[in-house]
Image (cartoon, rainbow, N blue to C red; front, side, top):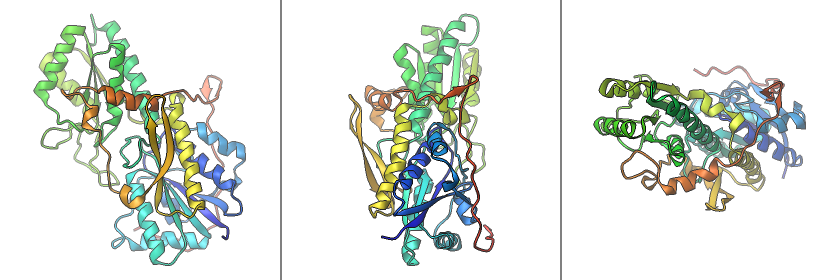
Length: 418
């Protein structure tokens, strides 16, 4: 088969390990110079393809690419920009094909979550319809851990580790001060519809911490919640609440809904922690503190899970292997073989079964009372947060890579995203 170039882009909220997947893709592509020429990256995700704002990763040294494995965030820039339905946004999809044709791109690696899987699938469909030879491979990434057909998603293990550790450490702090100060600590974590990240905070209970977890999968019951918190404070002197940003009332209203929408059309969330803390203060009078993990949880490469880093890199590598083998419109996946010892293999799933599907927390992972995690959930979570993969340090701070990101000369007229 003839050699063509490849296009790689990062999409949506970045993670502590998305660059490890980029490292895997680029390193694997360089091992097949007879099949893959230059790997172009999109500056700021798919926008880079639409604007023909491409980066020549071939200008980066092997050492710089290797350093991506221990660097957080998106080395090439990401974006929250969703291409809509083919029939309504056909000109944008056709523009992608035009750019790919202009730069002899035959491989499309799109590194993102559910919306990115949908875009990748649509690009594959359009390339077929237009008779343009393109192999579209989705590289999974999402801290929410909600992609279907894979045991876990790169990015989740490191967020889970950060949240579990932070919950434990903050709870130790509260415990030491509860006699005269804070008695309730509320930590808000990400997770719009799925409570995987919040579940990780429940691991602190294994260390004797009284924890209440508020999951999106369980409708919020304010009287029951307040009774639970009050009982724990009376028994232990304090308690910690881990609340998912997607926690909602029985009628579907988010505790933290702001009445606005993000670029993907999702309800803009933020502020569940102060809402919950306010309830505690008003009803129970307990002193409290609250915190929102926000970007800290998804950017914390200094405490990334070794399992997560390894899997992110492996899935990037596997994406290239699938493309070289002739696969199209698929996503490499993690298939768990056993919990103890933890073993897995890399598989694949068709994008038409991945796109627009969300994987929620199984009910058997949540305790019957709805406030904590079960032993089955612990068996699932613990291998994913196992191990440390510390970056190199210099002068007390981690050493992270900043690439040259050399631009590629444009060959097409400017395009109005309109």
